[in-house]
Length: 285
Ligand SMILES: [Zn+2]
Image 1: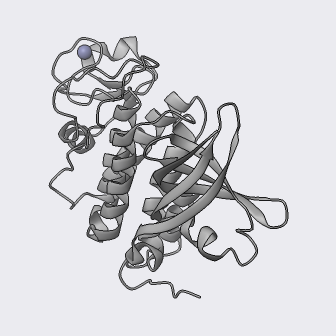
Image 2: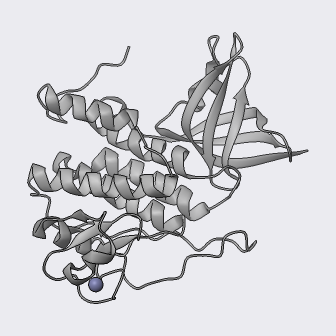
């Protein structure tokens, strides 16, 4: 058993007994871990406060092989984003990134690049213009897929390698764009509008880098940060198309439906009248 230190971002938490809670964190040095914060539920004090979501903490915990739950000895807040805490829309976008990381990343597989990507996405969710928040999330989704070794092919047909011209579809099972000529081989592919196909192509990671060998023991390469498209004036229908396409792709890899609470919350806000990200600010209790 070793006492170790790492930067950490809380992904979610649940109660443990009357007074403690388990905080699922993505740590920079040790990957995803389950930390037990003793007494964090009863007037938790500094330990509980430092393990709240939407912040980066320095945590010290007991690392023990073969143990699912690890005990925290110290936690200090290192960075926080007041913009996220007082704006429910921004918080939901950042929350989606945290939920996706929890859903798709395996425990105890360190990837410092992925930690930096997550921290960067909190930065961007806090600072981006409201109309760019979708783009911030798409970029995170693509970068996460890339970090996990399954970046989709967005610029060329994944079947024949030809240009993505004409009637382009997205085949989640195949992992990318399919041209009109090859559609017969992927009947389940989702047809894309021209605008959606162009936008997706613009978010294609440059070059076809080889993903790190899983379980090779070598440190993973830093995760690619996907370029964000310049335009933020994207029609709602195209936004929905891209959001659904990317989520369908991630679900294909997860092997199950990903029902993200954050995205359901955003959809609910849209249905009931979209609050401006600036004006709808929640007061802290
Ligand atoms: Zn093709």
